[in-house]
Image: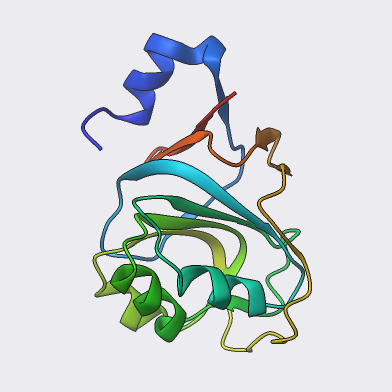
Length: 155
């Protein structure tokens, strides 16, 4: 990403949402962007694993875990699949785990927290649906822009 989210907001604020959550940066890549793919799930990362194991073509996976930090929705093995398959990054309204390993990866990872507890693997949830996170509506295909200042999404 060549433009900061703050500059982008100054230029196009009326065309954007800002996700009003206090995300942490957990990957080595702190600035990333791409078209959104979305998942809605709760304490179950089966769909996250399935999706990041498919070609990403530069997309950003936005995961609405309903803000739960009770279990991790992504760890190092799933993140490695995302890197290997050409995803630019993930934005998780939930938790990750394996944060030391994730910090070494050239992958964009925004999440609320870390928790060593693994999640269910049943595949419960929905893929490529419109999600609402932190006052922002994220539809599949909308451009996502993330950096140290936060996450902006095209309306």
